[in-house]
Amino acid sequence: MHAVRAYVGLGANLGDARATLTAAVHALAALPGARLAGVSRLYVTTPVEIADQPDFHNAVVALDVPAGPSGPEATGPLALLLALKSIERAFGRQDRFRYGPRELDLDLLLFGEEQVVVERPEGGRSLDPAKAARLLEVPHPEARHRLFVLVPLSDLAPDLVPPGWTESVARARDRQKSIEGASAVRAIAHWDATLGSWVKPGSA
Image 1 (cartoon, helix red, strand yellow):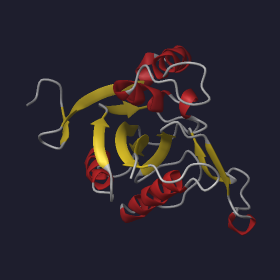
Image 2 (cartoon, rainbow, N blue to C red):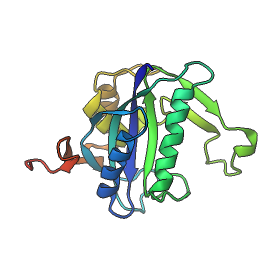
Image 3 (cartoon, one colour):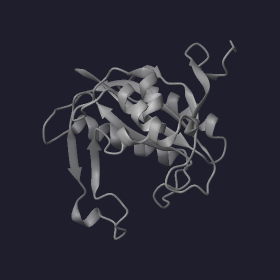
Image 4 (tube, rainbow, N blue to C red):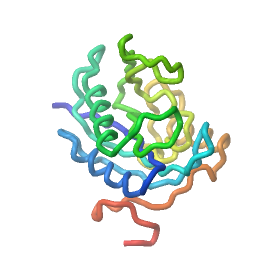
């Protein structure tokens, strides 16, 4: 089956966030039909919207995954989204308020050249207006405005212009950095593929 390059954002700020994200990378790599194509550096990031919580750890992973049919069915992106939600639950993800603390957050940022919007069925919508009415939207609608996404994504695909964007990932990163400030996202480690974990600069 044809494969497509997907990018997944990882975040956590509860418990041992670094260990959680390391294990999450391995869980993503183990998904059926998936191949780990790249792992960004690991970053400590300042929370957005709700400041009264611990700093987050964030990263982005590139996965080559089965494309599935395109068009209205969008089974490839939906299958990956469901797999991400399953991994979140396995890591103890609790349903909390938007922008709040997370045991593990996995966001489908990009799925090849797909532009997909899937609305939630009426019966599955929350009464909370802050909860998204859409089950799936790729590219992720907030990605271009979040430094904690753009910086690690630019480690893997700086020149990529995602579908629907008018600028590259690197240009969006620089624009957002001028808004949020460079100190909002701080690299603390790089991924060592041999060890299968993040290591501090200068380490083996």
